[in-house]
Length: 119
Image (cartoon, rainbow, N blue to C red; front, side, top):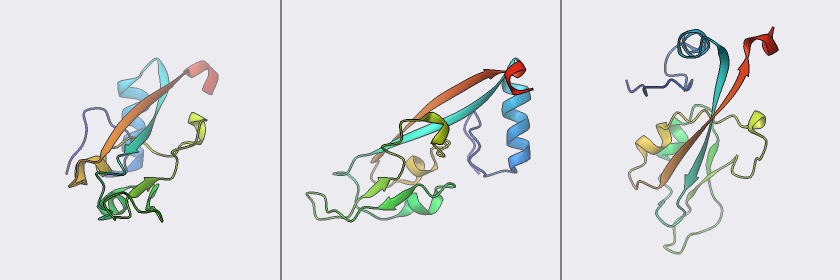
């Protein structure tokens, strides 16, 4: 089992353990939620679908449009979402790890709030 150094809640392990790890051990002065974005290189992707099977949030699908090589590449469903609160991707990088074409880049964003705001 692969687990990144900073847990992002990819649901490989129990979600309760992930919440405790993120909220109390890593960031004791505030609650932090990690959101992710991915970028899929349409020209490198051959549409194998492995990224779709490992995505815990199911935010990747095969595009209906062909790339220049004649493949239907994967596409990120939250690509045009601007509000960080509406993004469901956790940035777990499971898609990028499993991609045989190295066509996926993962970006993570942290949203910090103080504990006083959440009480």
